[in-house]
Image (cartoon, rainbow, N blue to C red; front, side, top):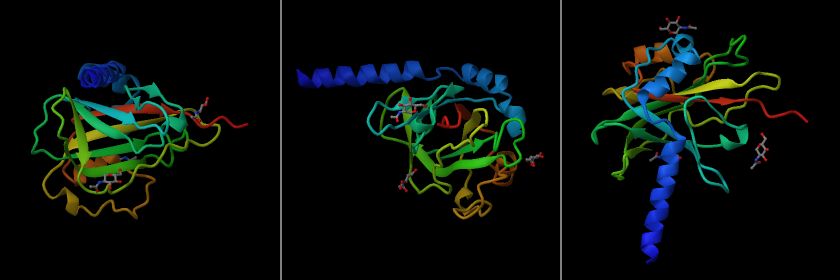
Length: 212
Ligand SMILES: *[C@@H]1O[C@H](CO)[C@@H](O)[C@H](O)[C@H]1NC(C)=O
Ligand SMILES: *[C@@H]1O[C@H](CO)[C@@H](O)[C@H](O)[C@H]1NC(C)=O
Ligand SMILES: *[C@@H]1O[C@H](CO)[C@@H](O)[C@H](O)[C@H]1NC(C)=O
């Protein structure tokens, strides 16, 4: 029956998606530590859930991220989609932030952090899968900005962090859609807005487009 085939396909693609991604918080924490992300972002990173990030593609299958994956820039058009492996409540709201720690270069990150995304009011989608999709119920404060490391730079680390959303977060005025995206500090922002430590995260490495 056709329906069975569709179901089999859906299960297969979910399985391959999960395989391509991280499956344990220990794996992600090790990747963050190896890449010096907690020190450089001045955050405490002891994830309790796995944050899965997926980039939709115009004419190919979505690209699944695992912590530390190198992505060609043209796969990062986005906006990315988010899901969580782990226990999260239906009533809980989440904030997702993405920062570039290496602008303009990892050797001299004088403009870092650059804010590439800041969105709140993510909630669990309707699905009952192991991988729980997150859907935003409001527009992002800082919409997704595709990585564009400058020519000649080494690859940059783009770090995604998932936070529990505290009551009143949407009233914060430190970051608005018109706030400069440069010289952002996720650590001080989290402190000022009572986000606490991130409960999950991942990161991608993106190098500049090759110059002809
Ligand atoms: C994306 O960029 C890579 C080089 O980084 C290139 O090989 C590939 O063909 C590009 N893909 C698309 C769909 O443009
Ligand atoms: C969710 O975010 C996307 C962009 O990331 C935006 O286009 C969409 O309007 C947002 N949804 C709601 C309900 O605001
Ligand atoms: C970022 O904020 C943290 C916490 O407030 C602070 O300790 C740190 O010095 C700040 N980093 C920079 C580069 O300003």
